Image: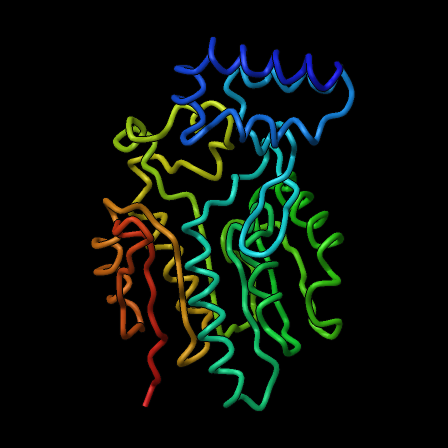
Length: 284
């Protein structure tokens, strides 16, 4: 489609579908649509773009790319689209790792539990200007394939002496290594009680395995997870997890029942409870 005709079509499309677009794409604008269209030069690609918009497919899935922290990541329906607020987790974890590194006589080790696209693990390892040993786990083989692709394309952005490995497992099951830092953005939405708060676009297109936990299993799921974290974290190591604003205070109380101190719920950019952090206690 010629440039002038495409612009005219896009303006009409935006005007005709504006209510639907604003509902499914918060903050969408005609300018943003025109920007997205720059990625599609062929008529067939442009047609698929508009067809996908009419279905409410997230822009990141349409283009198979999402920007997070300092990099662009491959994404598809097997992984969550990384959110801006999760950058707080990367920033805090990097601050801790950089500070701890100065007092270590060994290589720093961290693990990202439920890595999805690998956005957290890869963003964190890029922030560290010293060699580390890192691990990323996920229960989904399809998700790990996406993370491995992202690692292939972003490998040049972190220290050539660092090592990042991937393991398919449920949380930390079967992982015997010990870590100085454990980060995670696990599923944290109750499948029934919390579902009404989930945006329709998220419900329709993002992977439910990475979103939901059955209500009856919710508390036990996190009890088991925190036990794994307790066993895998070295003394004075940091655990930093993203969670649901309605459940983090209860999970704070739960984490305090394990060997953790300085347990704290941290807010996101909008002032909502978003993260849980704790430091592994020393035995003496």
